[in-house]
Image 1 (tube, rainbow, N blue to C red):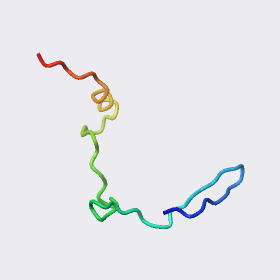
Image 2 (image 1 turned 180 degrees about the horizontal axis):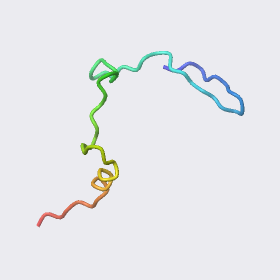
Image 3 (image 1 turned 90 degrees about the horizontal axis):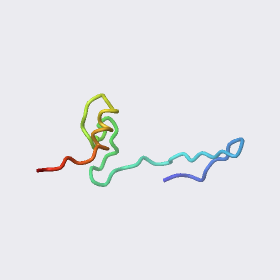
Length: 60
């Protein structure tokens, strides 16, 4: 999917894809449709992180 890396100054390299990635399950690449997040939660990333990192609540 990538050509050989192109050498840049100061020892850097860059690889540029020469094809478009296609997801086998959908036949598309997510362009203009996006992907569903693993955790729903709105616009507060810190709140979502706290929920995901919190220990599980014990069921009594």
